[in-house]
Length: 272
Image (cartoon, rainbow, N blue to C red; front, side, top):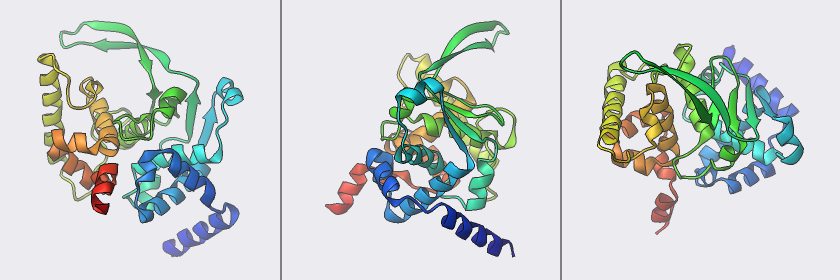
């Protein structure tokens, strides 16, 4: 009964909102992250992104809306980067994972927040933090337009994936802690062990005054470690798998995806 109901809803949605094939093709051509998807993955991702756009509100700051056209292809490209996280999951799991927000807000530039943090000695430090994105429990996902425009390639940076990873993280708590809800076939102890090893290694790099293999922002908080590692998993999988093979293997099981196969180099090798 439930399966027939879902099928009926899907058919009704398709009838009301025909999938924009040309806009999706244009979206894929704009972002390397989408260009190198296999045909089957691209088809599934495009349609999931189209549903995403009709279930979430995409808002632009008035100042930005007046000066920056954001066409259907651009909207699909943004939604596809969000939905890339859950591409390997069922529709039900995807819907559940992203049920904690209803809006993506795009701001003209990076924004600032006053932050207070207590150090290991119990001393409170206050400072102003510049942010490319922000996420809160049941709140909107906020991203800065310049950083959005820098996302979508294989550089290891992606503000959409980063902020949506926080939403996954919040699936079982009010805050980010680097420990999202796990599928039944994954052991929480293994998750903790692998991420703890990565965290300790990042701290060791910084203590030696060396640059870590992934963005050192991952070393600031366990929740940021998870989000940065998700960015690297999808947009620099060769770097992540080279530096932390156990973590890459863990995330392939969690996301049920193999981003290494999507790299342009992998595509060229396959054709050689």
